[in-house]
Structure formats: structure tokens, C-alpha cells
Image 1 (cartoon, one colour):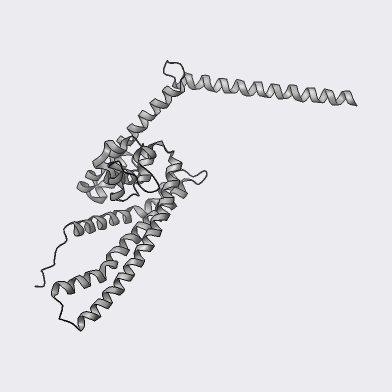
Image 2 (cartoon, rainbow, N blue to C red):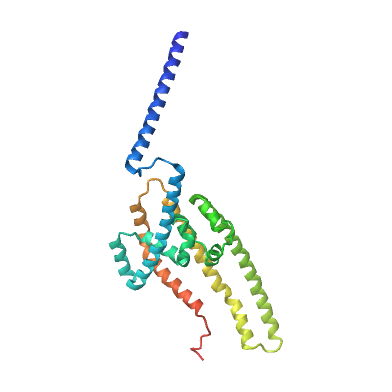
Amino acid sequence: MGRKKISENVGDEVHGMELAAQKQEEVELSIQRAEELFGDGQPYERLRLETEIKFYMEQMGTSLLEMGKRLIRLKANEGHGGFMQCLENLGVSTRSANYAMSAARKFGSNSQTFANLGSSKIQYLTVLDDEQVEDLVNGDGVLGLGTLDDIEKMSVRELRVALRKEKSERKTERDDLEAVIAAKNSKVDELERELRHQVPPTKEQLAQIELDRIKKELFLPILTATEQFRLAQAAIAKARQIDGVTTEQLEAWVVQYNEQLSILYDEYEQTQDDIQNICPDKSEE
């Protein structure tokens, strides 16, 4: 009985060695196949390949921004219908086009500064506001992310986690700011009551009171829209991570929202123009 156990143990060991040898042979064949198909005639060297990969990642970032600039011009000149036809002719999905245009709007004037981050990081960084982008360009850090050098050292996953944390902190800041605005509105109401019993206020004083009163009407919609867009981005990211999902499924999933996004872009540009060119309305005078 004892001899049988020894024999079984030896057999198991031999079988294990055979499996290990077979696995090693498969690895060697896989390496050989990779070198045959994609080798460049030079010996394998990890550091050299990492350097070359980084170079091509930078090229992807530059390509994304340059593509986005041209897509913006195309859309402006062709209108929505013509633009969609152009995308079909180019074989570019609406999702990819929107990513590229968003990146170009956000980073287009600083293409060389952000290009070396690669296209994936650039896409994630489009959620930053203009002030944060300017801080990065100037070499300053952004809360929760650090400097451009810090972001470059992060993996895409680390950047995604950092952005989520930064988003949570910004929500806290927004809640605090809303509380400040509420307190200021209360102060305005108190001041208004006091003014009623004093010298009649000037038109400018009354105008300032009204401006302070409706400040929240401008501030909250912008913050709410920002929050809703980030929720939409989170939903898109979650959809992309579904096991087994295909590009065709994802594009079909978002296609119904493309026209609405186009309308939102138009509303954004109109609001931006109103803010940049704001002045008293003399039409009723």
C-alpha cells in the first residue's frame, strides 16, 4: 500500500513537470510569434519599447486635438445635417467626434502642453473648468490632481480615481458656496428693509440689490448643468466597462442623444456670447 502512494506522488510530480514544460513552450512560441509579426529587426528591449510607446501616445494626443479643431470648423460651416454626413463619409462615430471636439475646445490653444498626456487622459481632463486648465498650463497644481507632470506619471485608472475624488470635493465647495449666497441674500433683504426708512436709494443702488438677488439664478443653473454632465459622463464610463459590450451596441445606445447634445452646444455658445458681451439693455428706454 505504501509503495502505491509513492508511485502516485512520483506520477503527480512528473505530470506537473510536463505541464510546466508545456506552458513554457507555449510562452516561447507566443514570444516568437509576436517577434515574427511585429518585430522591427532589433532585439527585444523593454526600455526602448516603452520609450517608443510613449512617443506614439503623444502623437495620439496631438492627433486627437488637431482632429477636434477641424471637426469644429466642419460643424460650424456645414450645420448639423451636413456635419453628420461628413462623419459618415469619414467613418468617424459621433461619440469619437464629440470627444475630439470637447478636447479641442478645452485644450486646443495649448495643444503642445497637453499632447504628451495621450488621448485617453486628455478625454478625461475635459471635465476640468477653464481656470483649472489655466493653472495646469501655468505650472500650478490642481487640487486632487497635482501638476501636469504629476498627471503624466499617473496611469489612466489613477487619473480617473483622482478626478472622481476632485468632483466630490468640488460638490462640497458648491454646497458651502450656496450657503454663503443664501446668507448674502438674507443680508440683502435686511439692507433693503433698512433703505426703505432712510434716504431714497439711487437707481444704481437698487440695481445692485437686484443683481445680488438674482445672482443665484445665474449661478445654480450653471452648477446644476455641470453636475448633470458629470453624471452623464459617469454613466457613459460605466457602460463602456460592461463585460462583452461592443462598439456597435454603445453607439446605438447613445445615438438618440446626439441631436440633443448639438442643441446643448448651441445653447452653451449663446450663453457664452451673452456673458462675454453683457451690457445694459436699452431697448425699453
